[in-house]
Amino acid sequence: MEVDKFRMIHQDIVAKIKAGKYKPGMYLPSDTKLVEQYQASRETIRKAMMMLVDEGYAQRFQGKGTLVLNYEHFAFPISTLESYRELVAEINLESSNDVLRIKSDVPVPHVLLFENDPLDDSILVLRRRNVEGKPMVLDYDYINPAVVDSIPKCAAQDSLFNYFENDLGLKIDYAIKHMTVEKATGEDQKLLMIPSNIPIVVVRSETHLANNAVLSFTESRHRADRFTSVEFSRRRK
Amino acid sequence: MEVDKFRMIHQDIVAKIKAGKYKPGMYLPSDTKLVEQYQASRETIRKAMMMLVDEGYAQRFQGKGTLVLNYEHFAFPISTLESYRELVAEINLESSNDVLRIKSDVPVPHVLLFENDPLDDSILVLRRRNVEGKPMVLDYDYINPAVVDSIPKCAAQDSLFNYFENDLGLKIDYAIKHMTVEKATGEDQKLLMIPSNIPIVVVRSETHLANNAVLSFTESRHRADRFTSVEFSRRRK
DNA sequence: AAGTGGTCTAGACCACCCT
DNA sequence: GGGTGGTCTAGACCACTTT
Image (cartoon, rainbow over all chains, first blue to last red; front, side, top):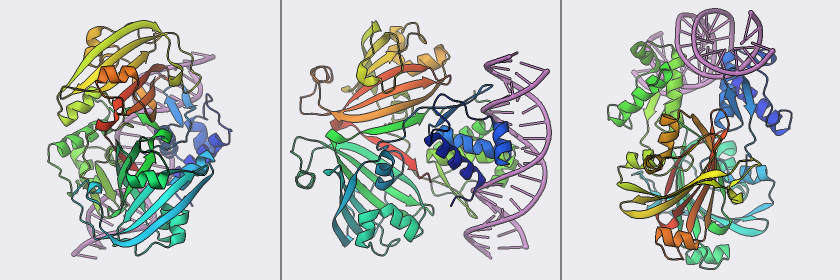
């Protein structure tokens, strides 16, 4: 799948960390050794290493080496653009997906339009995410009909990200996400089966493709009492 | 300040974007032109450009050029390791800071210890952040006494980040942040002057230095009805 | 002194977009 | 075909840590 050398090296090392071949607290082989091992130039090795550092897998020390960190890679990081399926797969949670509505020609609610992006009437996909059998999240996806013709129910059932990337060949690139905490609406209470006093963590996002076109506007509504997010952040100066 | 060439170039371009010399929708000069302009090699130019891309300032298109994006750099991104002062300064909000408590030999609450990091009794700094005169956030900082001897009140009043980085010369590197939504405690209600039905966004973090030592454990408690977070996220594959 | 990572270079080849 | 960005190389010099 991966064709670039530095990506392959990165993937290989991540796999070895996950497999426990490189454990937290250990030092990775030095750049020079990796140059040997992967038959690559040092800058290529460094590119792979910098990705590990960015993701919180490792930390580099001048004169010493590259330390494997013990940051746990799980639990809903809102700033990482990953699909729900990828996330729950990583934490080994049992989860299911109810497709509650697929409807064309739906206008995008005004609150979701952060910028003045015009968008024709969208395709709305409403899904409920259940973890361990309990309703956790409502996802309202308003999809750009100029990019995607229609959504087969099985795609929504499985994973929209998968459908967009693998079936349609779209390249998802970045998103801007706004997070707030709001009171549960009547629909929240009904669909998530919660009392009115449980607040909702609302994440509204605008997802763009590599060609910068808007793919979708999404509103994710999480029951706040079960919501957790873990972020790894590096200081930028 | 900046000594590295690629950092200087990056800073220079960011400054030009902020000054409106490069506007959203415009293309930046090509790599080749920037090589000329800054008298640098192309890889050095690319390093600076990749930083812009990571931060959401720009997007690169093969065969076309580097487009300036109109992502707004403001509002509390919880995943960016920035100090409160840096953030509010960027949004031009009037804000103040009440130092409510500075106390030594305080044990770190158990909920803040994500990993099994042992830490001697810490220095607790409790502050209240007010925006436009209204209490918004309570910050409990439990600082590692092995790294920092004591906290002068004026440092807490101004900015702990500033004090650590500029006065003590510490190099802050990364943090792991956990976010949840919880009920307001009695202390929250009293200090933030809110009724009991307003929930609290709680961000618990563990901040590390460049030498990987733990600098502090922090618990930030935001009144949820005023909390907003904006994140820029790129897809990693 | 030897080994580590951090930066920078000059050059190469490729894939892509436009005219 | 000429310009753009994406990848990769081989080599250089530096700052830092360890022996």
